[in-house]
Image 1 (cartoon, helix red, strand yellow):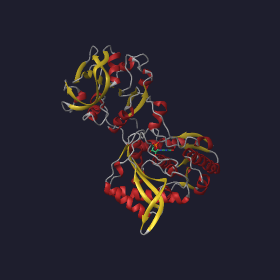
Image 2: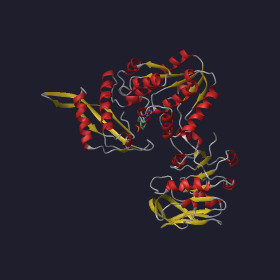
Image 3: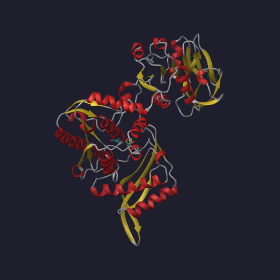
Image 4: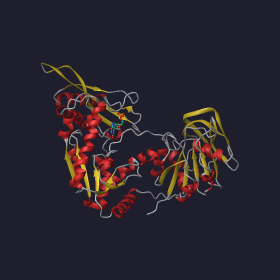
Length: 512
Ligand code: XMP
């Protein structure tokens, strides 16, 4: 099945990915391409629309990222957003200059042309989100100004004959109240999109493609139990069944019962060819007495590679190695243009130790929320699909000081209580990540008639959209009180519970 395609041309804006996500949420398939993509290459993709994103530069500055003007004359409708709007004006002969007064944040938008297709069903004087120092000082010949704000006389413009549209505001951010409507209007009314992008069709199509591509070859997948690798594995399994072997290395640093849960889902729900490598002793043995956080990470990473290498050698030569790469990783590694630093590569070294011909990445074109939808389509239980992100080195990055089997067990218990109470309060979906940390603080307490000298557990709960910055979640006091009381009563060896109220930055999310 062929989908209609919209291209999001990335000029380095911080919201470029968000634009692409919004477009897909509106049922239109889109891909992010760097602004340097040649017009002929874009035309060859036969897009039904092109969106120029925002970016941090001034269009008139030396070295500013600019696409070729021919992109505007392909006969395909174009929507310029923020920098993309200014670039459209500049390329078409209009004027862009520093605004007398920049606009940052919420502003009221006055629509001047209510007949513009872009503003169909958009309220007059709606709130929109602005973030700019430059503005379109003079719209190019052929364009009419269709909206303004107090400090931005050209907040939107269009040349309906050439199907060129531009908005200074950010329709993709939540604070623009009719932003989704505007994007939808561009897609449906200007580009005539039918909204044919649906997860079910995509999943079926990918499974069929995997079947053809893999043929009769053997495939191996390193399963971490996280959402991405599980969805990737189940998809490949649907395509080729027992030709796939999943290897799950249990390093003993998973959350309570998580290893068993992964095994149950893979073996019982999906009847996969599943190897669980119980390497807890090997990992904990190598970690004994190590207290330096970076060294602990290195030991866990290296041991993982060695254990996986050993297991995969037993399988002999394989045709394909499955990786759970998702679309943001693809864009970040250069397919788009946004400057983002990827900090954690859990399986980066696996390709070096497996004897395989090719890598297969069934989730390569999906955003995280789409991976979840694909997982639900495939019948993976909700509890796994909505599992919060968990670092590759597991509880190893949540235990300060030395990692012993006793300390791991203690943290597993405390963390399980915290998670249980959060679930009980119905707060799971509203928090990006929440967990317990075993600190290396011991302090005096009193329990019953006796003096104790025991460990301190720290609790952490954060919201974030990109994990680069994060805010603390103000959990209700009665919930925190209940968790604290349960932990000190139910987990021997703990006599104090504290709540971390530091945002990121300056702190990181994990304690190490
Ligand atoms: P920090 O502590 O750096 O964490 O603020 C940001 C996010 O990354 C996760 N994290 C990891 N994820 N492998 C991963 O896959 C790792 O080694 C790793 N270390 C931290 C952390 O849980 C948070 O979501």
